[in-house]
Image 1: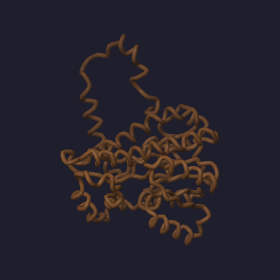
Image 2: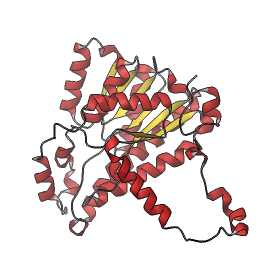
Image 3: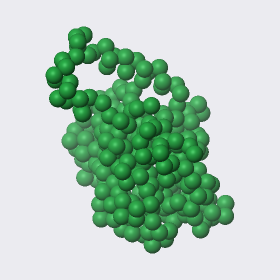
Image 4: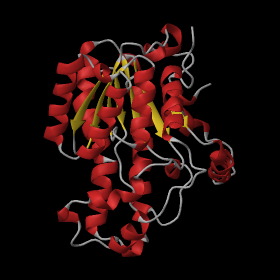
Length: 312
């Protein structure tokens, strides 16, 4: 029996992760009608799962559904129009998914926007929109689906889309990185907290992928347009083409499926970031005081000084 990496020695490793066999399981995927989300949906459905694909773009939902129908998989997919910042709509989407397929076992909080620019130009409207979607959308998904997953008692898995930018920060993306770093930390905390419920949690950190994230500005609500400092940046980003060297969404989807089956704590897609992460970790380790451990203090706080989720 395959043991989940990142929780070896805990009950997950002892009894096997619920998602090793995904056939017949039900997934709810936000931002699922194009790009990375659609790649994940295709991988899941091809593996025998059923998927509720939620997205804010109705045209993308229509096209995605048509392709699944064309491939003879229409009975395994339901499409739902959803703005992940709308909490009431998230609840209705959860109800609709259960009505269509029954219990939800896998939640993929994938919906997100690309927002960038110098922090000196940022306005409250930019912070509010970026955090509302990239962090608030994840929170809303967890708040609505986690109680249902716990209640049905069959275990499950939550995949939260963070970013490699949360691990190796890129320049002029303060709002984006703030949200994605929060999603990364949230995922790590939930990993240990939900282990007794047999619910795995993965922080999914993709690198550059061929998606339409450069068109995120088209989705900015009117209430966040008037006082934005990023209008010019978003127009330029909209004109940026995808590089042919960036990863294909279908390849990303297969990597997410593999991470789900292994119960990975982190799902990384791009080998190219490994040395950059090592540099970050070295810098952190080098920043600790060069002194002996205060034994009395350590005994008092040792419950804070390590976390079982990182044990080999």
